[in-house]
Length: 155
Image (cartoon, rainbow, N blue to C red):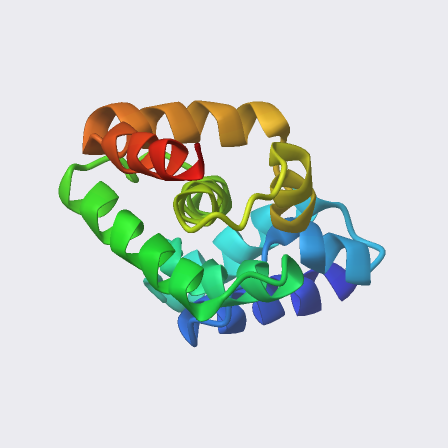
């Protein structure tokens, strides 16, 4: 019964674009992440509900707030994510990981440095995920130019 409640709550959050992860629901309940996911899929299948994948942009405000980042960094993160979506860099990637990496890049560009560890902890992903998504964003979106400008200005 508890897993049905957790699965239904997760479905409601997804349906109404309230960004919550399975990890967060698992922490607040006594149900394993895997079980909540399984029940969520069962509920949506049985009720014929189609829910789009989470949008990484939905996580930006919450993560930025936890990291005390400015509105400029948030805006830049969303801009980076929009470019990433157009370049098809987000499909098949976890929305929290790509959102965290975009926030990490935007923070560097705006001189509000946070460590990969800090960003990873807030997003509930690993530092390796941040590093991999960060490299993809830099390479594919040519963001290394923006970072080089910042580094020149710091000298």
